[in-house]
Length: 397
Image (cartoon, rainbow, N blue to C red; front, top):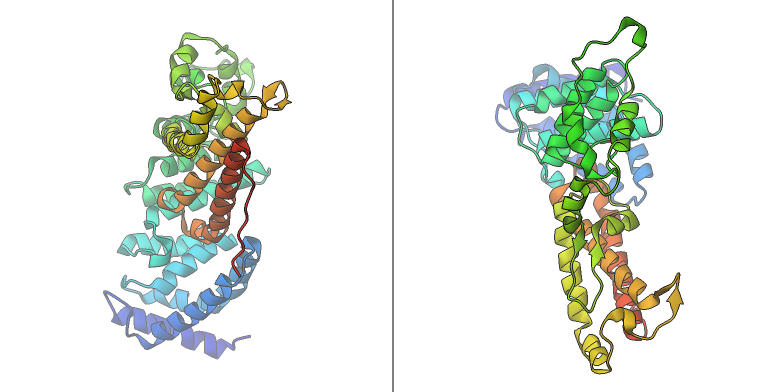
């Protein structure tokens, strides 16, 4: 444990260094020492595969940076400080949201940016990390301080970021205040849906109900005897109930929910792929459609010679090729669909960092690499099985 004298020295040294360097902390002795420590700690974290263990280690390391951070915040003049910004991210990961916001206030005020490894603007990281933490807490039945979310909204209000990220923050705000301020909550959720149609609390509902959310009259007076206002969940469920399958809206959008194939291979239903691969609202319909088209094109190209042989044998479509039946359908159809699903999964996971990775998302990248490889391997096996080819696994020695 550090002595009070040592803690005072570290804090004073950090304050002195921060006050002396207006543009960058590079060259400040105390800062260089902390950069060296940070590099050592990062190497330690990189050697850990478990995300849960990494978070625990970050929580263990953070007190060692506390005096340095306090000194910079007390006397700093806004110089770019990679140590400070990394500590902010680690505090978010470790659940120290108050400490993270203290740094965020300073960083936004002086225009600091995140270090290169994070590859994302500060505002997007703050919005997504706090929103995801809040949504995770709500899902598990735990509270999340509304003030933290409101502070993040204020800090990032004028910043440019991907619409799904901003929508996620509005969704978290809406759910946070739904009981105390239902009218305000509906306003937040309207903004979330305007930015991302799959951002709402009931994203699996048919799209036909969503226009009604914007038409809900929250200003109409309530009778004093009417009791408390309905919860957002009740309002949303009633909206869904009024939109029966087969409505004109559902019919109009049906053509957008299927990838039409070449006539020999089967068409692909977007909703079915989304459900099978458990894709959340971060993957927009447009993005999923793009990935599906690429997957279908790749699979069809791989199977082109085999398909030509089957057509020459007189089979008009894949479903006609003799094969075992499972659940009343040809296993060949199941294999084709399996290949498509995993090609899509690999494509989306490979592009995750470009679109959605946040500071903690960068930590998820190691797991994503394994996910991409596994998805491509499963797709390859499914295509081989469909053609009656043996599976081959190559191990690197």
